[in-house]
Length: 486
Image (tube, rainbow, N blue to C red; front, side, top):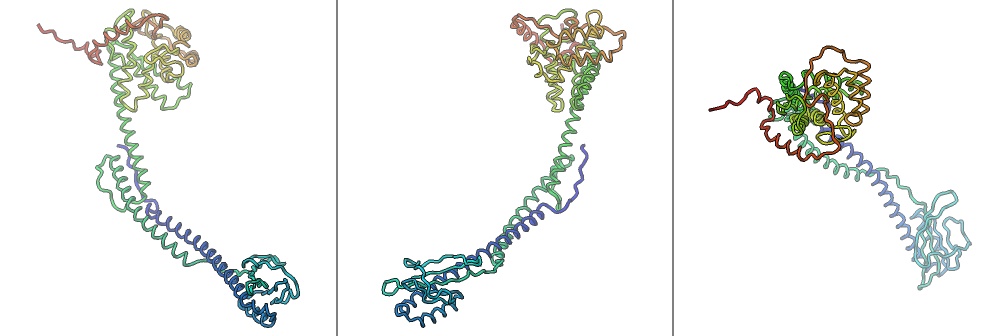
């Protein structure tokens, strides 16, 4: 069972963090809108003040019409003083000729100005000498339907100092907090669901019964992550155990074949050692090395599905028998690929008889399209067979290297062959008396390809031969012959 991961509360729960974050966000939004509301209120008050000034100018123009027509300067002065006191600005009264009749500031007396508001009253903003602005309201003075003058009110724009709108701030904050309360309830509901799923996953990964989730669990997302890690560890541990058990069973099958002298004894172990030297030279990852090692030790696994008479036959094989024997990597791959942990090993075994020129079996892969592990396995397996198996006497290591060198570029990867030759020449295998094992088809462990020929008859022979193989591990049937009944 995978080691159990201890769950410890770490800080606030997800719901509490969500409420705090949303509350801070709501307060921030309310403050910003409070300032924006204050600015909007200032603009509104300024617009109201401008409208009041324009209305005051129009009202004064109506009352000043008879006085200006009768040239009653005294009463015009009193009217201008009253308006000046009400609006707190400067009042100008101009007659029809443009002369300034009344100036409450006593600056523009006896000066001419153009009448600008003859059509309709309006407001404008003008710059004064000190760099400040002045808002001026203009209205025409009409008497008897005729324009007889103009009234101008000049006021400095007031600056309203309302920096914060508490009413708008409170309204927005209340609305946002209401939404936070709704979000808190939803968050509490979903966090409870997450806690339940988390506890169920953890119990399931630990091999326990997934019951009711305990109350008061904290850090839901961390618990869920721990549960997923624990489940992953459990699954990986289970798959690894299944894979190791399947490899052990497959090795027992290979050992049985070696014991019966159906395959060269120790061929897988020797091939694994030779392939390991190439893997070390290539600095492969540990996982790739382990897969290559397993594939080398199971190199003869698929021969358990080949008729034992073929494996024991001396001399040349028929075309159908050769085809049946060449199909053993596919049998091995089919037996291993059902285990997820061994699928890459199955791929290496499946393509061990591919040729570099693309004329191999079973898929006719060419060059680098062949898996790297399959190319390494093919070289190591061929060298071991050349030096341990033959019709009469196995080859010396130097002669075996010459055979590999002659086949590089067609059967084997030339670059890997060169690396292998360098490794063997640097540390050649010890020469000793070796037991000779005769292999089917002669001393060459790879198939020679003819340039011409039709394989239809051979394929039909293979089909006819394979139809007689009623059981996959037919080699085992030779030990238990059927009894003949009279």
